[in-house]
Length: 411
Image (cartoon, rainbow, N blue to C red; front, side):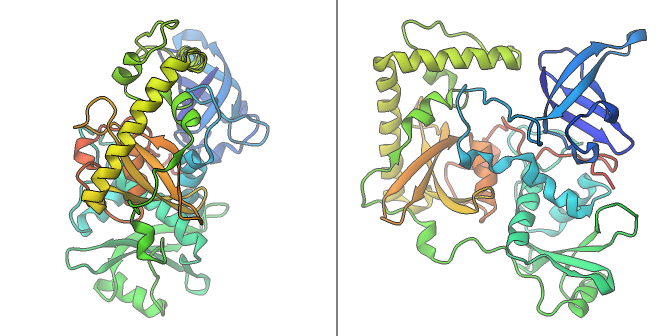
């Protein structure tokens, strides 16, 4: 059986979320076979056996294997095919990195502090209302900005003085850079640093400490060397797209109405909203095979998506801001996002990821749900767009969902 870690406390226990079961599954560190229990974070995929505990205590997991750890296997995509390398950018191991480096006592409180200092911005998607996991866009931004800063060696540490800092890349209402300050963690065996506060250089006791300790001050993450990297060249040919991957291996990301309208005659579409994960996976495996076997259905989907791409290029010619730059942490590369309106020309459904090659041509790699697309784009800058607006996007993935209690971040 497969599921996702809901949380795992340092004392050695936690819970797994499994759509195949009505209740969350209890997990003990003694039953984890191939991973350090302290490395488990919410969102990690695990495979396990399950049995019912006595006295009505509910299901318990045995023989637990983390699927991205040595000896485990990667979870099978719900679309039934391989996962494109670019789609691994939201892997928990990248979002986990900030936990390996620092202890954060109260994540909601920390995020509220950063939001309170930063220039006003929407950090939640439409309808988001989860007090335990506030501001998922901001948390995702902070985790991946940290990964980029480490790669650029811009996370500064002064071991002798027990202080570390990095530039968040955000600014306050006066456009002054906001810095994250950390102190040395003296607890044996814990992360080397411990979150302290956010500050402005030279202001207040912490801002003054930052200036006294670091010269030069920590620099922000850098994503591009040429402004042309942020613009789409609309005068060349249309991008060459990996349509087989986009269509057959991303059915779960395409609008249900669009897929239903182009369903092969040999296949019967079903409502997947209440299907368990394993059943849904098998359903989309069959669906993909049916499309692959029905060239008429495949061409209909491909032609409609090509029409949507043509419209996206026209929109970009009219307004260059239509193509939105984004950063992939896994491959450490820049790409551009183009809007694909599939059901109606008036409403964007998914984002096509395109890469400019050395030849000057563009390659279309994959499609992303809009919440995922926005979260990746926000790493570079706040999108100034008429189609990728967080207040108009419903969150469908686990972007930005990470532990938010003191125990869950582990020390």
